[in-house]
Image (cartoon, rainbow, N blue to C red; front, side, top):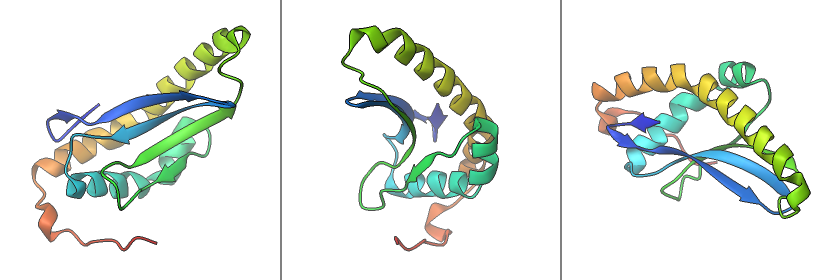
Amino acid sequence: MVISGKKSLIPSFFSRCMIRFCITTRNVSVDVKNSVFNRLEAQKEKIEASFGAALIWLPLPDRKACRIQYSKPLDGYHKANWPEMIQWLVEHMIRLEQALSGPLEKIKQELKTTDLSKEPVQDAE
């Protein structure tokens, strides 16, 4: 997915006692990262309803990245689980992409005309 003219939202996969994927920002300034995350989080209920489950929202204010993730307990190192793992990842990544596509397109358009230096700063909790 592209934000601010750069590929900035990428899926990530991990496997150790669980499988998970997350959408992570990268290649964007901290201001853009925070703005995108805050705008998405403001639509959390709508996004999660569209996705069909609660997501884990990690703003990571002291880091360059932020994450929205979803996981499932599963031994990703056991080859017998790989077909189930692949099917699960594909299904849920498609659902998340569909849930985020509308909000991200709107945010992308808003960022073209927004002066981020004038946006209110949210305190880290």
